[in-house]
Image 1 (cartoon, one colour):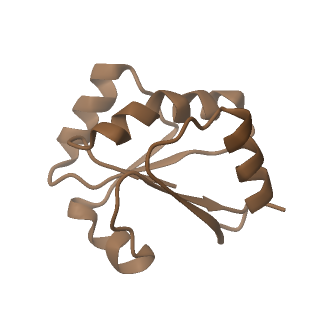
Image 2 (cartoon, one colour):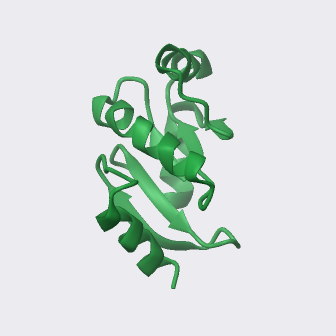
Image 3 (spheres, helix red, strand yellow):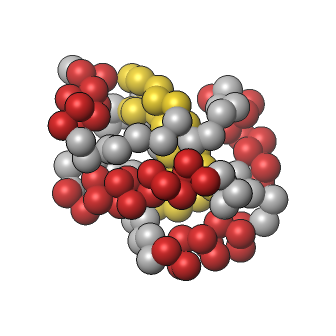
Length: 109
């Protein structure tokens, strides 16, 4: 679960890596946009050709802040198949690097 916003440059920087991870097929990526208007996030996704399978909108991050204490962007929650959080990564990452793939696997052991 990746928390992002259209005004967050590190969020946009890591998006190609997240999309590549999604395309590899081993992981499900859920993007949660926290802009004031959903159209702001949609505009960025469209502009850059990002095609998430699941993209949600949380107006101003109210749910993410209250339920997951998500305060810093980008923030990614690694969950197991039951949606139980196993790890949290803050800041932009190269998700398809061998280092990050090992970190994800370690969270999910």
